Amino acid sequence: MSKIVVLRMGHRLDRDKRITTHVGLVARAFGADGMILANIDDKGVKESIMKVVEVWGGDFFVETGVPWRKAVDDWRAEGGLVIHLTMYGMPLDEALNKVRDRDLLVVVGAEKMPAEIFDLSDLNVAVGHQPHSEVAALAVFLDRVFKGSELKKEFKNRKLKIIPSEKSKKIEIDR
Amino acid sequence: MSKIVVLRMGHRLDRDKRITTHVGLVARAFGADGMILANIDDKGVKESIMKVVEVWGGDFFVETGVPWRKAVDDWRAEGGLVIHLTMYGMPLDEALNKVRDRDLLVVVGAEKMPAEIFDLSDLNVAVGHQPHSEVAALAVFLDRVFKGSELKKEFKNRKLKIIPSEKSKKIEIDR
Image (cartoon, rainbow over all chains, first blue to last red):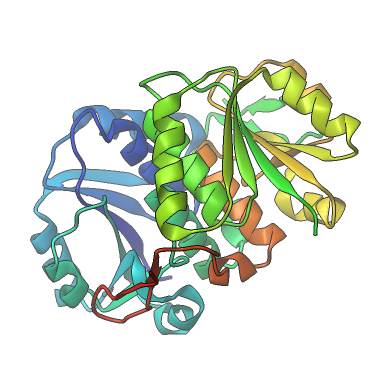
């Protein structure tokens, strides 16, 4: 089973707290193994995500403060692919057949990214060529990689589980 | 052609500024016709989204300050379906065949939603049953509704257009 880790770049304390938390929660919910928060050590964001892991299960990890160049270099040194999600990249459909069964470091950033990331990445991939959201780009990218199966993923060691319902909130308490 | 409008509920000034802007940009980029920001008149959010429309084209609209009950009632009175995206709802795959060719009001909210929305909606739909992000839920929902074609949508009256590229930023200036 190949490994998928999200590298979140360009995070600014306070301003990006909620967006970066959403990036982490999407990474987890859509089947990634973990998130690296580049350069910044934001304990609040990590805590928010780890609280969700504690309640809803799985073994998603968050690392903070890793210099982004190091994260990218380490990943490539181990033979993994680095995929930079950017609206300037190649269309998603064309990229998908190049990423199957490979370990993927999925790089998502803020508005201003260092120019080198375009070169250092194996693929620059666009989830549409319109400005929208790194949260959305990550979700749709992972949804295509896992072909929708991620939405049915069961998480181990969960305390709560939702029972799908047409008209109300139903939660099962596991322990 | 059926109409799709996003109803953003539970927006809090300042705190949700960036998330709600992402919701609006995703709505536009993934093919919705407009966004209604329920109850709150946040001019900053509207401005950010309309700036993107001005540069990147299309005729996406943003309405603010509409009471959410009124938005829902009006939509249903005109024969449209109200779809509430919530992790408690029915699985996305099961919902999709019920929404084809209908006018859709897609309701996305924050953590705390009024309980009535579960009853008032025609369908409560889960994009996965894990906590993640309304931005991601909206993107994946629209991606499934449009079957990926939204990622190739051309926007009219644009000033800029991206030329997909494997290694750099290429932008075409239309006028």
